[in-house]
Image 1 (cartoon, rainbow, N blue to C red):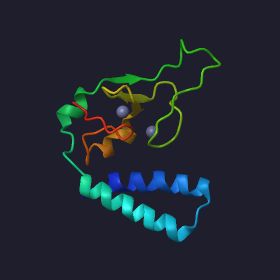
Image 2 (image 1 turned 135 degrees about the vertical axis):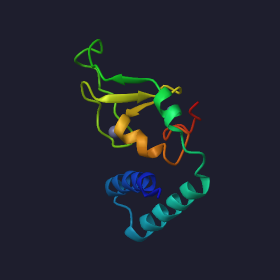
Image 3 (image 1 turned 90 degrees about the horizontal axis):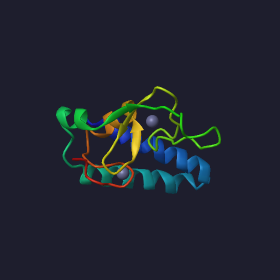
Length: 118
Ligand SMILES: [Zn+2]
Ligand SMILES: [Zn+2]
């Protein structure tokens, strides 16, 4: 049922693990622990209405200057590209709409700062 959200967490962990070159056994245990704690803490999913109510915008890099670093989505770790649909949470963190949607099937908090989305 809720595999999508957990899968996202595992993906993020995997990326980090690859970078750190830590021992495999340890990282697998860590991932399992993380998934379990995510399951245990899994709270209220966001309703469709709540999801719709989150301000949505198309990313527009104009006005940031050519030198400015593009903001990135901390779920998929890719930078926002022009005209991608972005959801901006009330904590001011922003994510691709397609990335944050599965997250909110399992949670009503910001994946970045755990602020509750209202
Ligand atoms: Zn993303
Ligand atoms: Zn946040």
